[in-house]
Image 1 (cartoon, one colour):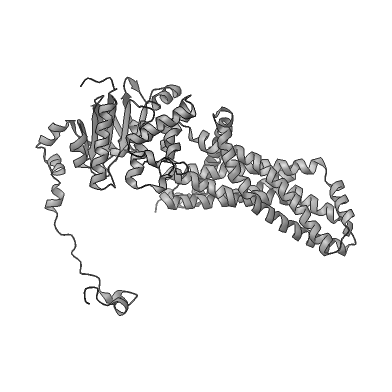
Image 2 (cartoon, rainbow over the protein chains, first blue to last red; image 1 turned 180 degrees about the horizontal axis):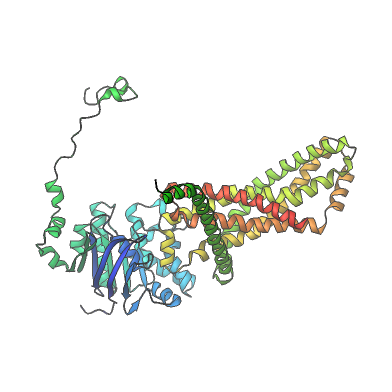
Length: 279
Length: 270
């Protein structure tokens, strides 16, 4: 891959909360210029790993290199500069509720650049049109749908033209069409801007569409790291079960209790609405 | 049961009390550091002027009506009660002095601070708390926008400006309220009332009132912002419940601290 975007190197990282490890000894190099998907079941430590890579949490052991910089060893000002080179899309967009879409996207430019108001307007407009939201500049986040908020969050993450883009569960809570659109958007962004993209997800369809490289977490360790094609061809039983969604096929009916007896209800609803099925 | 276990059981209440006080001390220390951080960022923050104007509008301008109303009725009650008490001793002429001194030295700063805790302080906690649980503060940090700088310092500066001004407004309207009941309603002498107000109030009284309001501004703003900022560390509730608990704690703690601080300042300055 001919890219100048930085690699992300994770070395012997152990992450957890209050001294309890969640995932131990993670070693991986997420290739620069590609899309890496960190995959795993809910609660396996994907988002915790992301928070550690972003230095929002402190790991129990190990190191994370963004490019050639160990983020845990960087001095304050150097880390501040590094933060200006990365963009983050949070699960629900994390847009500031008190600001309009325009002000949300303009915020990093206002804080970190000497651009004039007109120039900021042009940049924000171009980023919002990139995600198809240029007509919603004056809307507040609570006036937008979940998918629109995510796209707006993506526009904000992209506004400083970052070298690395992190996305936390970008497709969670979205319908299939919105999910596919967001996947397409990420692929387009990767093509147009030379950057490293890291996506945390449990969405297999999304992984298959966008991933170049995949890291699978589970059972407190790294279960797989490698190219997407290798993962899709794997015969390893746990991964196969995960990829084939075998849980759904093997699932036995769990509802074994009898339906609730109407006589235990406090309100005699049958008196007011009768049987819902009868005319 | 071994002797060690018996001793442990006997010491358990003491351990709990000790832990409670140590936790309280740790929280007070954390709050102090939080305050210092907020104050430092007032001077190092870029664009603090615009953010402070917004906060001034919210804390100051939007509180004008409620502060005026509370000031008016407090002054009216003080006027009534004082006139009643003074008339028993034939000292009706001192009504203006009594109303002015009690409002300027005590009631003005304290009641303004308590009203602002309820109106603006609770909003500060809820706003910052919601931002915390919805990852907006994380987003600010990752955009290299210091949340202290963006959220806390403008509120602190706006509180330092608006608390004394609103206290002054409370005092003025309160004195007018005292006039309405003590003079207009109960037939006191208008000229004597204003003369006593003028002669009784010295610079010491006014500066005491303003010093109190500045200290209350720092207390209320620090407690309310701190509780919101660390909503996610609460043990008694997470998510929206944590925000509501944080808001309750902030309001109760602010009111108690205002009254405790008032007593300490009064005893030191008298």
